[in-house]
Length: 451
Ligand code: ADQ
Image (tube, rainbow, N blue to C red):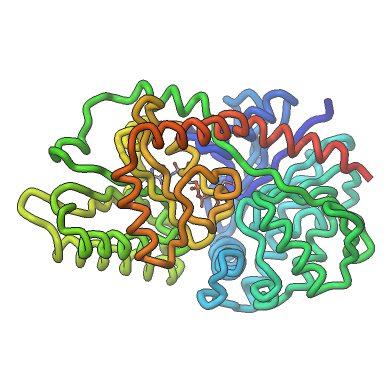
């Protein structure tokens, strides 16, 4: 089998806890003696003009540094102040500066130059996510002829959102240089087709074949999964000491998210407030544990979401707390994965209420962590890619506090038998369509997409 080369914005070095993507790529890379290339996380004024190799993994790892200017323009700028808000339906939060797009192009071009000397002619190249849309075009310019695929972890914008980008044509030009473009959900493939048709002279050849800018590409839906067996084992082995049940008779609900405006945390808090206002019998009986480590804090919109959520949690607690009871517990730190698995398992309700989300792995982790004999209930936003695969969850519109509050009430009161039935169906999907299934399905399609 030809070698797999994965290229992503960040490469995990050291022994930071592995998330789903890391596990997925590691598996796929190990089996093909592959190479993973990405940004080291270090910014330096004068970065090396070659990759740095790192020992200690079952596959090759090579990293590059960025200058502080590149990091500002490419990462914080175009990637996270333009593409991220647009892809998550928040064009109002976009900040367009000319140097952002220039920096984005410049860094992608530089990554291509760094990578090319390390490639072999029959490598399969798998580019990850929105930070690297232009990479295939840059690699092609340098003569790379082999298979190049892209996988987008976040939603693809529809035509109205796409049109708010400073350069919608260029986005499709970038994508046209890939052999295969993979999306999380059918919704994203549909958006891609509609946006390309609306904004370019794209020709659709079949459900999954397109001609853009004179080039043929394939596109497909490959919903990402988690390492389900590993997570089940982690949750089973979690310490039984049940901190959340120290509150006698209480039912606990859990939310775990990066503190991002796409995750619907304020909407979740407002729905909880609505629930407590309308059902006084829940006083001292129910609590919401929200774990949300801050990210991208130097981007204004992230400072605002942090202030908004802290303010709301304070208000709800001020309104309802008693000397024995704090309705919302808000933790701003990452939690070790074994502890996280245990907390999921102890929570009667899993709250996954994003306003927009590529997939949302927390929904799958929550299901995998449950005790099948006495499982909790997943409340899932219709705007998470996961909703397409998980219809047995309580599917809600996160914008409607009344609907969400009602789902919370239904989840808390749900009889054991119904909880077991819903959970069994959800667990089957999470186990069958796990992260290994995802990468195998994608790489199989990439292999067949050769020109
Ligand atoms: P994210 O937006 O980061 O990922 P998500 O899929 O929920 O969203 O993954 C978050 C991961 O971080 C989960 O594994 C979760 O357990 C972990 N995590 C979050 N908060 C944590 C905390 N406090 N402590 C420890 N771990 C924590 C992007 C897209 C998603 C898509 C993934 C993968 O936005 O839609 O599902 O990529 O493709």
